[in-house]
Amino acid sequence: MKEIKKVKFDIKLQNHLWFWGSYFTLNFLRWGAYFNDYPYSFKSNLIEFSLHIPLVYFNLFVLVPKYVLKQKYFQYTIALVLSLFGVYLLKTALTYYIVSENIWPEANREYHPFEINHIVAVCIGELYVLAMASSVYLTLTWLRERERNRSLRENQFKIKLKYLENQIQPHFFFNTLNNLYALSLESSNKVPDVIIKLSNLMEYVLYDVKGTKFVPLLKEIDYIQNYIEIEKLRFENVEVTINLESNIEDVSVPPLIFISLVENAFKHGSLNNKNLKIKINCKVIDNQTLDFEILNNFVISQNHNPKRGIGLRNTKKRLKLIYKTDFSLKQTTKLNFYIIRLQIPIHNED
Image (cartoon, rainbow, N blue to C red; front, side, top):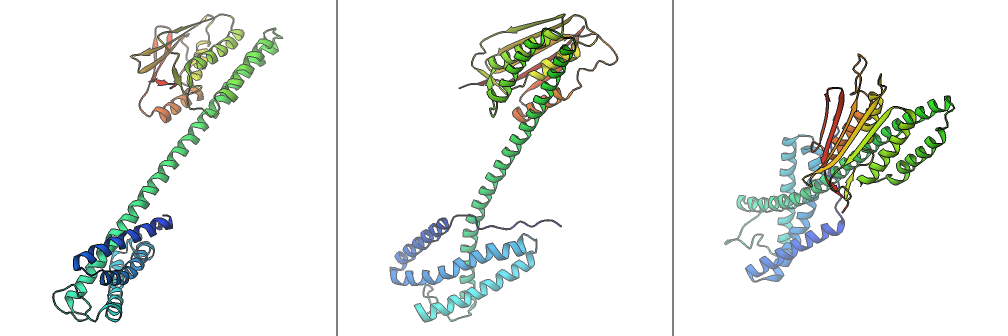
């Protein structure tokens, strides 16, 4: 069964008091000046507002949830008409006994209870107040609900982004530990160097980028270079070239956004490849776009599929969350080289 939303009394009490107080004062001064009779205006408005206010809140918190939100419009109309009739009876009686025996002194002639013109005038007046007060309240409630939804979407975005980041980090360290394990089986003297570099990588992930949306690009490059050094300890015949062009000192990027691309180059470039060559190009285009390109040579085989892997998929998801459609990630092959080119908007540290 579909859940029905309820209108909640979630606007502060002082705001309600301020609204009704301002409205009462405005009406009192307006009609007092119009008839040049402020005592009468005060008494008549006091009676009217003692009926306006209950009717408005009865409509908002009883009739609207019970009928309008359940799409029972005919029942709502009947209930509203009966409510207006009840207000008419009370207003007429209170005016007669407290203010004046002439129940409608504003008119050009004396009216008696239940005359059609008097009934219509009172009902129109009540509907005017009901529509105005309800529209103000519902507009404020809509604005608050919109802000809640925006905050909820933002929190969901952060949770999803954090989930993807947490997936990438264990994935990377799992691969690195596998490398370390392979070296330990060979009783390699490279193991201590790998452990030191791995600890530097873990320090960066656990402390330097924790809870940050963007980090300096130079720090990311240092992180990538440490990773490359670890992989060089594992692969004997590997050549890595990093070209940094333009001024990138003030550029910031999402943390760990490039590492999956570098991992991918080592993972798939090393398959059946005795001489692995990797080239990384990083430059700024027109002071607006950061261009990150990584190339690796590969040996064509039936099992070669560089597009597989959780790291690359998660990178694409993170990019969509952060930049929506304002980025470009292209994968191509040229001769014996597999090329990934990522372009993202410039984010300056300032």
